[in-house]
Length: 217
Image (cartoon, rainbow, N blue to C red; front, side):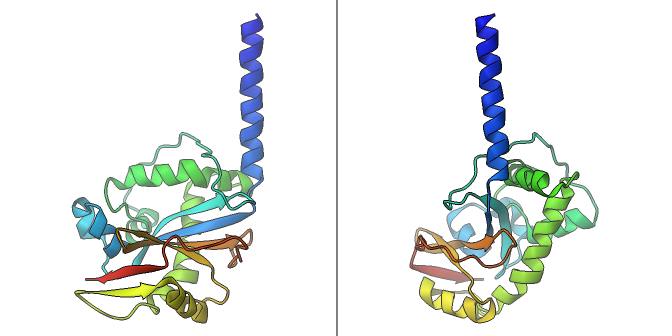
């Protein structure tokens, strides 16, 4: 009986903490991938035919805690099966997996990050998370960010975070982001947003890499 009570207490505490975690985020990270740089480091051959060159794709939209750290996973256990409809066409275009099956990538992002937003905004269908993220990316970031990058092919240029920051803030005022690199190649950008999805100023922010190689193909 004591063991049963102890297990019930632990489950109750865990459930309470998980609910609290889901409700306490006050900002977001919009993570976007630069596929050319990413594929210099990782094997993208499996999905090479669906990757648009010289463009950005979504990694995810991640609720964050007040201290700037990522929230704990808020797993829902939802499974996703790729279908032939407008939503999945947009997912394949703007949110493809670069290294493996799309379904596994989308499930990971939904179950780790999106489910918290579903609870926060009362979304009953997981499609709402994907639609919202795609709309935010396409309407507020994708086309504007592409203007920052020169129209080049078959070349690699060295750029600094601070030069890119100035160029990006010229088209997206107050944009604050982290530039992510691996083996000196720029692979990703993390844009910090407030609870209303506007650019958020991070007081304790420093780029993960100050210089990187930007690959064009």
